[in-house]
Amino acid sequence: MLCKRIIPCLDVKDGIVVKGTNFIDLREAGSAVELAERYYEEGADELVFLDITATLERRKTLIDLVEEVSKVIRIPFTVGGGISKVEDIEKLLNAGADKVSLNSSIVKNPNLISEASKSFGSQAIVAAIDS
Image 1 (tube, rainbow, N blue to C red):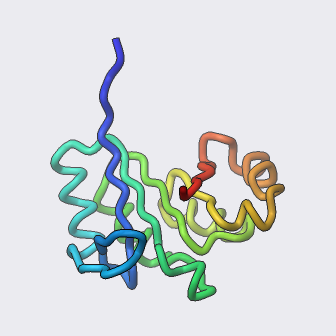
Image 2: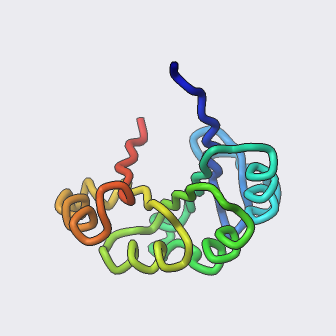
């Protein structure tokens, strides 16, 4: 029998979860750490955080935030945004992420998927596509 899984995907900007349409008219929804803990406590099966401005601002994902969130949840945790190298993936996994979500970086460097999969296992790599 098929089982439904609840996997919230939270857009994060400057450590705050935001809501909007196509990243326009963003409204703050609360602390990323507090919302992660709440979703965990309410029974989410996994959690996804996307640092929506990391790539645009040409910076890395907020490692400190990943560390904080991983301390308050005990479910699989996927992190995306600002990831362009295998070294970025290693830092996020070491900070507590279980998986990383690759997006625009795999358009620029399609080999990143296979490089990352060889280094960390395919179970830790997610290819995300915005449509």
